[in-house]
Length: 366
Image 1 (cartoon, helix red, strand yellow):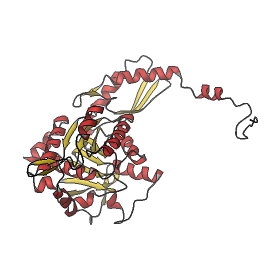
Image 2 (tube, rainbow, N blue to C red):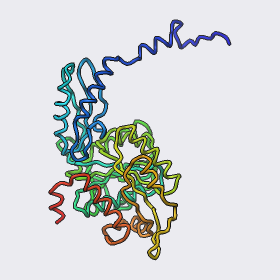
Image 3 (tube, rainbow, N blue to C red):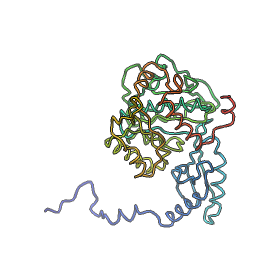
Image 4 (cartoon, rainbow, N blue to C red):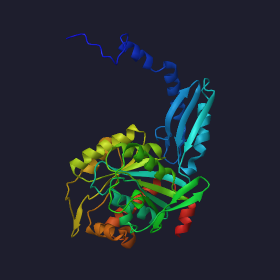
């Protein structure tokens, strides 16, 4: 083979020299590991886990004996900043700590609702879960960030509504709409009806970031973010740019859906976001008191056991859920005693047992 030298590569180029120049500084790497070890001592009392494992600490860097990182937290967790600073003060080499707090003003708990593939009822699950949390006395917001198929406004009867922009202390922000006491914002409300949202790369990133940071939500106990299905750029952008404290995965029982949700679970874990639980949608059809496994059975339990993810609930297949979505009516509110409504109520109760709901929300519901 001829000894060919590309004109784009200098004659004195050596792969060994490139490797050595790009190699991480061992002292810096040691300091980063020590900083992370200190931050792992800071435990969030409600979730009973440290702030590193919960994905709250991101973009940590050590430069010239200074520690920089972003702290993604809810409004009620501001005290974690001081605890983190104290934990790092034990490092004798650390001269100063710079912490950039990233939060959504007024929002206590931000949860992502995600799925490995489309067609499993992710958005339907997000809407009905929001309704069930609202009925349990929580203040709830719902952000439809599914840029490829934003259907939540139609499910809530908000297709003809206009979004207003208001002045706040932080500048201009979108004012969310409201349906059934749930505050709602969707990319569909800013686009022409029935037109595709053909966004790519930087434009997509900018729009998603605006929807996270430029909405005046007010005081919320929960903000549910309905993500696009899959594990692409849009999903990763939303997760990395928002203080999501956990993800809820939606799947159906069949093995194809289970394979896709497995990829989603690994994606969230790779970016440092814990999995709150798994919801198996279309789990069974109830006919004359008998459960019929239309799409197979055991898939949700299988993945929950395999990857140690809590199975939060199994939602039955019910034709009324389709009718309620088409007409903008929510089944948990219209028919609270229906089997599907009861299933969502149990999931909402489980979330309230995990996250502390503010006393004011409990009082307002009485």
